[in-house]
Length: 254
Length: 235
Image (cartoon, rainbow over all chains, first blue to last red; front, side, top):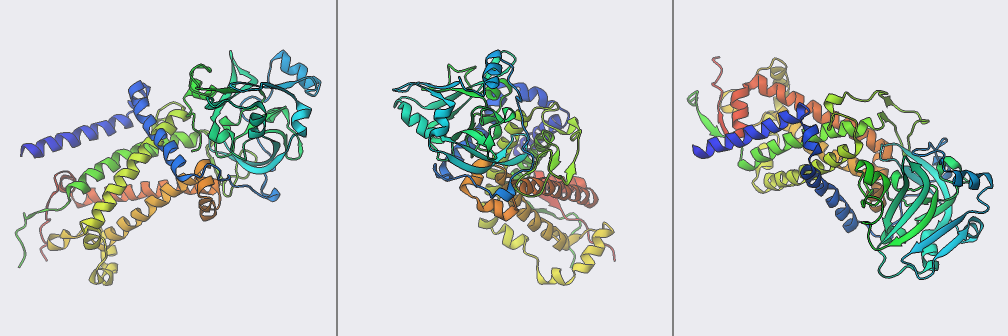
């Protein structure tokens, strides 16, 4: 009988927990750092499971020209506000150079023309926003791995960080990916979209395409590519602007 | 020879009861965090793509009410965190249930409709519409409509999981077949939404049946396992 009562109590408290959820007490539960860490187990498991079942070189689905979105909507920044960017935009990025540095043997500064003359990969892929919508577009650019090989990434580097020209308040946008994604054949720095130069709304002069991940990883207005050992010293340490500010997950494969 | 009216049987195994209540918590959290995620872009499409300029088959410009979302304010990151955590818990819980159901013979014994049940399915439907539920000896086993809805939900839940996975760009890379199966990422998102309401409908009918069949006895049987057989109808 004791066992029965304790079981009843258990169920009762489970029921009360559910009632609490319904009444919105979950807002307080949600704010607890312990709960956030516990819930984060789910996302950690997702990344682990995906890494187990996914071949690291498997290609994201590519689509036909007929399947492309008639209108590819923009999101985030549509026009960076810094004076530097305005100057470069006015001159068609003629005097602009991409910086590749950090843990590399040969830091690079590349003119946009140089990058355009490098081998090109063109792919029609699906862009999935974390909000839920999808758009299909055609991207042309240099495989990131080629740039990294030119620069000679050090054996101690683990992540590639993208520093961007657009700012949200005080901080500039940034994102990061690991070397598995950085060296993936579909990971490119795109300078063209839908057979035209990349428009400002989509991240001119260069944006990252890291297929297999959500839209907020696809950094626009990339100014600098940095190889780092860990993400602790970048921004607030979570590996990306939205990761730091609003708690989006660093791994955005789901 | 009718059994005594107050006969008490042991109806639900411990694993069934435990997984049932974990399901209650998981489904509640999944539904409410799912609404939160839906509200980040409250429109649904068919096909591979779908955004503002594309034709949607459902659009709720103001989104679903905040009292129905976790957390109550707009917070997509938190909604995803909750959703994926409880999706994993729900999956593990479901696996425990399935393994137990097959291994213990619960599914074979209690889920497969019997011939005599199938033959009298018309009567069962008519009885249910009048909210007349099996009594006495007959109430020891699941009736045929119950069996079909339990089999249905056991099919619906994996579809829920698969349509959810099809929304993941990482999974689409590993298993592109899923996109063919559901007709694209936006179709999968639409189906995920529709199937969610299918589960809500199942729960609603389940709760109505529990209320009509005697809520105290029914709920007790899912907590302690003990079920008092309803007395035979005086006919």
